[in-house]
Length: 305
Image (cartoon, rainbow, N blue to C red; front, top):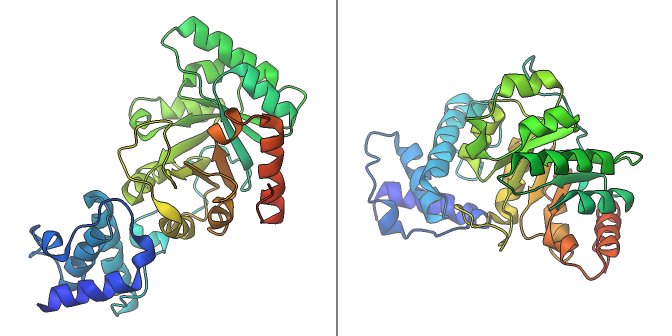
């Protein structure tokens, strides 16, 4: 066994809770061309591959670990990097940030239409998202306007998924965008309109991309397997969720993906201020009761069944 592999073994042994995705074997992890990197950085890169990180996330961690080593003057295989400066993130406050939203967004229900939005808003769910899928602009406009009307008289904060123009026109509270939408959306216009912005992330590289636009909150996921959409990245698990939450603690954070009452305590232990659910509410026999169960569990820190 060479020295590089031995160091990678030590890193892996200390951070098995970060395992997810499709871990590589030690032999597979060494097949990439890492010879130009400092030894410790190359060892961390190999370790991250063996823990199942996709390559761009493994590279983010290895670079951050190298910066941490240079900043502290020593390499510590136990110290998973968690300082924003080591990941190249800008300090807060930021003059170009989107309008703020509450640090604790609470239960966040992702819903298919305005009728569902109104139903959950009246049930006391603090944050709701309209995820209405249609290529018909007129239908989108009607549904977004109906969702805005549906939360009137309640305390629910309404985010609109994807449809930024309709969200601005209707005066919604906020907008949620996926990574693929960031490049095409007119972010300056959206920011100037007063809309809050939430952005989906699925690992370190995407968190760095999202952080560059200083959104109002970050969604972290998918934490657990979900059948709602085909995910490019594997479920992240609670070990990674805790690391993400430590790194991005200055953002309001929303955990999403396959979360039910049984899994809720492990998610809340990460320190995220919100938990997003879809089918746990919309597929429940009694959606209002399901929402109440989540809200009670989040208030007490223990699952309520």
